[in-house]
Image 1 (spheres, rainbow, N blue to C red):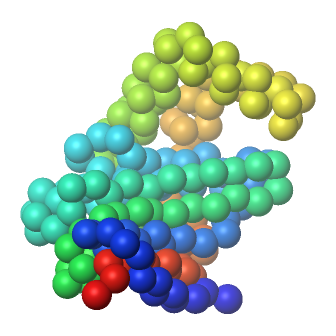
Image 2 (spheres, rainbow, N blue to C red):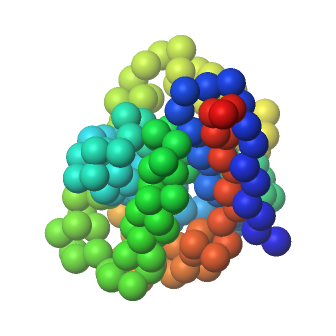
Length: 186
């Protein structure tokens, strides 16, 4: 059941995490969830939350989404830090972007761009030897096999705009999100 908690902390900014429990790596929706998470708050400047909260509204310096999964369960979350007075506005903008993904399917061009960008990010990260070795070791420890990058690419390429809408609606719709905010002590 979603919750909302506000805590005071000795900090100058408000820090908010919005998130929920999602599927694990073995679930058929796993790759769609990875693409949704990247589309919303991945490392690219074109990530939807970055555009909405930072570029257009000028409310945050950092906003990102993170998907952490294990075989049976995972957690999806988005983080942003902002001026305390802007916390509710930022939260609303995050919810609006998620709702937009639910109600408005990506065009074929948008889907192709999102897939291509995500595959590029995965390819670059796999070329960093130490990071790649750690990822392979984690995959082997958890699943008994190392992840084949070409297989991941095939899964990503097979995704449709309908898949992304459905996964967003079923797993991370705004009414499913719990919220934790640390606000400066007054």
